[in-house]
Length: 171
Image (cartoon, rainbow, N blue to C red; front, side, top):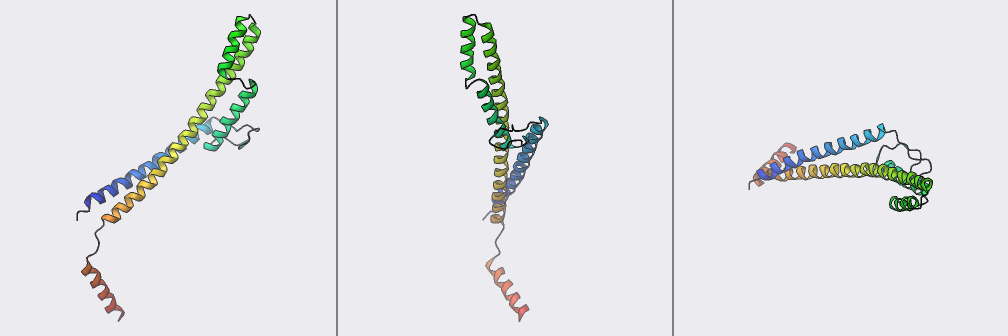
């Protein structure tokens, strides 16, 4: 039986696994360092991780959630689209002061949306990095299994001879 394809497949899987683990780890580190550079702290009124530095997937998620709550509070729960309709209505009615106020709220919602999207992108990137590292571990284990399966088994006579040699040494 030719075990060379299994051995080659095992070695390729081990190498790919190591590359995946390293790539996932480097990606995780880059995301973390970029978040830390921004010096973001989870808002103190957040129900999750208040006051924590945003430097990982959970703190990024917590900050994204509280940003949404703050935006809702600032606009009395109105969405970007709803505020847009109200701006148009105020302009049509000639109430420029009200239109400007509503446009300010609309800008707040828009900025909150952009910030949340950026933080959620980080959360997703962390998930992908973790997935890649996990796949790397699995590939490495599969490669290890393939290389061990490909190793030639000792012949039956060689096993018997080894036993006989042990028996002579212990006798």
